[in-house]
Image 1 (cartoon, helix red, strand yellow):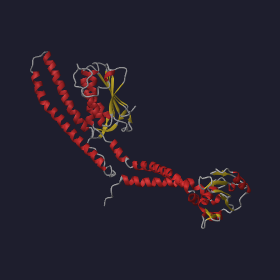
Image 2 (cartoon, helix red, strand yellow):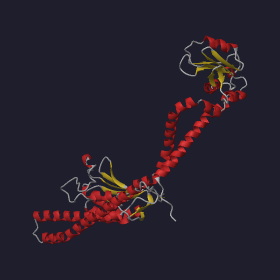
Image 3 (cartoon, one colour):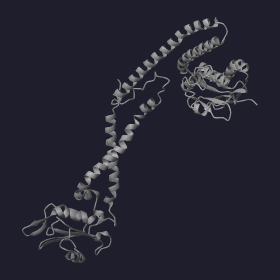
Image 4 (cartoon, helix red, strand yellow):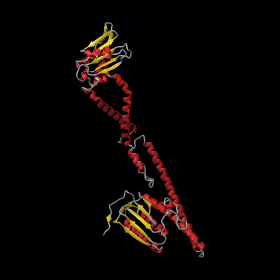
Length: 456
């Protein structure tokens, strides 16, 4: 039996409740010291006044505590508690009221609504006194209380009788708890989306057959992932049609080009024959590179262990006759006896041969063409020609870009090299030098195997 697909809403709800609970727990931990009041606590008289506002009532015979009042139960835990209640000419006293408290109360102006006094006739905060009116009306009930033992004010008492303050803070507290809950919940839930994000970031443009995995996707995002995969399928079908079209066109062009070449060879020697032969050669080269661009980009997805040193030696041996015939010396160097990477040997060899052919075409028909394999899994191809103009360095890897139009070629060679290298997770770049040109094939930071050092 398969498990139900995970739900983003369910995860967010659970995480939000958990975050809210954590925020409440932290809040109660913060106010827990109030249940262990010490000599520095000032909340005692306020708790007594909160009780007395409800428990002191006015009767025909005067002021009195209502039956079953909370203050008397609280007074048992704090024997020194006292209070004085006054309204008009009536008054009510409880406990050992200090003379200083009576004198202070008598000196208060009639408009007094709230007042606090500390350490009246006693040591510690048990001597604190607080005065408050039941209402804002100056003629309303005035209550003064003190003598509360701080240890008697427990958390339950504090929360139970300072309800007005709590009700005032409740909207703010609720918003704060919701904010804290969201700050905890949202990142936890978003972490569950990271596998899908990583899978999307890992999609390789060179491999349109890749898809986002649907197994671990939450059900709310599943339609989006399926729609995205559907778009990838349509793109793959479009790329496949384009490949077939280019391959078919290139293939169909080869036969008429061969016939045209045969007719050109039958012409008498002269400038017209030479120009036609060069043009047909360029067209044939373009057709071949168009086929290679599609075929090798696809082949670059295949991987096997390739020794770059041995592959580079083969390329140098293959191109050496053409280089010598063009007036060049050719050299090879390697920093290691073997440099193994995961690659397609045919595609890499074609990329290397393209760079060597480019060096022969643009090296000035003199100097040395060198191939160097480094211990960092790179291959450098250098020549001693005039180099690449500064304004052309950014566009030479674009298709059909040619630095000089008076030379044979169609401008697809370097573009093909770049496509092959990017299909391998690497790249090709032009290295700045004082003279000549150096093109570097870099197989990417992900391929840095330990190299076998060259024998001395």
